[in-house]
Amino acid sequence: MNTTTRASESPLIDVVLPAYNGSRVIRKALDSALAQQVPLRVIVVDDGSGDSTPRLAGAHPLRPTVLAKPHSGAASSLNLGIGGARGSYLAFLDADDLWTPDKLRMQYDFLDAHPEIGGVTGLVVQFASPGMADAEAGRFVIPAEPQPGWLSGALLVRASVFSRVGAFSEDLSNGFVIDWFDRARSAGIRFHMLREVLLRRRIRAGSLAARNSGSDAAMLEMARRAILRRRKVD
Image (cartoon, rainbow, N blue to C red):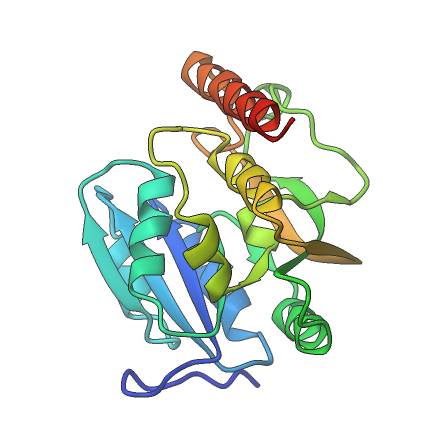
């Protein structure tokens, strides 16, 4: 049974959930947070949705804090949620995705036993969103086996790490999580990857997994920044 906290209490873990037009999926994402076995507080950041996403989020049994802002992308949504966090640890969950029930407990136990580690991640299984047409699903490469999860949704991180590394780069429309991991490693932050599946990542049109010319340009810019950081170190 999940242990949630009242607004006046300080949660162990703050969960930031960015959402944009996620009315069809957000309840299942929140249900997967509700199933966790640790004290947590959920902050849903609605990125200017035009559907019932904020209403559905606010009505969920988790009683999340719902923040609203004009549509400006996932990185700014994550940063807004981080700004409202009070817990010792931060976790992130896209409205499209689902956590396995023991995700946060395994990660918290590991970090509690390894104070030298800044964050812990795990494996990810990707799946095509139910009801997606075969022609649409064929646009995506969905690995059959679990993959290493260098994704925000697979991460549990000490909140203090963000004070050291800084926020997600809002000028990158894609690749901002990889960019953040690279900056964190450059700052000396150590990460560990568990060999268990912690995240089920939904693939659908319009999700961050859907590539386009804009996202490809953002990934190139992310790579350019990583190269410049290495040149400075060398």
